[in-house]
Structure formats: structure tokens, C-alpha cells
Picture (tube, one colour):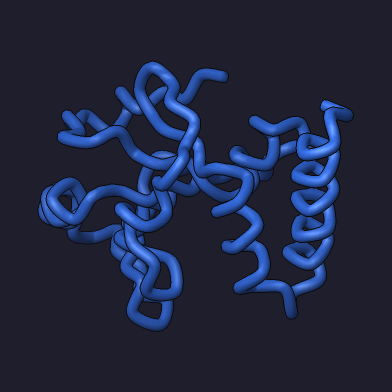
Length: 134
């Protein structure tokens, strides 16, 4: 899986963490939508906000930078980069949120039907992995 981070013209101090639809696709659970959702370290987020001040979105205190098809967040529902990157899958230029943390993120939004279906897909994936079916 390739993600072209070069379009951001930014040198990350810590590998960004892939969450959302593209993480679902990484694990073979469903196809991703159009945007690429990332959570980044506080240092990187601060510098990205300075670089792209016109593209900032506030979602209940979670601050996203929306540029070039990316949504780059400082946190999700107060859960930050350090928390969410635990047991992440390492790729060349980014990390992929672990299935367990992905499950947690989907549970946070489970009142939305799309996220509830994602929640079911991640649970099935984790159970299949636990019982050797993957």
C-alpha cells in the first residue's frame, strides 16, 4: 500500500498514523473512501497547522488539517497519537493503526450506521485472526 505523503511537502518527525477507511482497506475489510485520515504527533501537527492555516477544521476540539485529500488530526475524541499508535503496523513512511485500536475508534462512532458496520467487520477480523482463520 502506497500513500503519497510527498504532496504535503512536509518532513514528519514521527511517522503519521493511518486510521479510518484506508486502514480498513489495509486489513482487507472494505474499500476506502476518497480521503486519507491520519493522526500525527503533536509536534508535526503544530507545524502542519502553521504550514496550512487556511485548511483547518475543528470537530469538537479535534483539530484537522484538510489538504490534498488528507485529513490530518491531532487526536480523535481526545485520544492522541501516542495512545492510538500502540501496536501499529509499521510501513516505510507511515504506521497503520492496529486492529484493536481501529476497533476502539469504530466503537466511538458506532451510532453512525457506516461505523457500526465497520465495527462488525473489525470484530470479525480480530476473531478470525485469534482463531487462526486468517
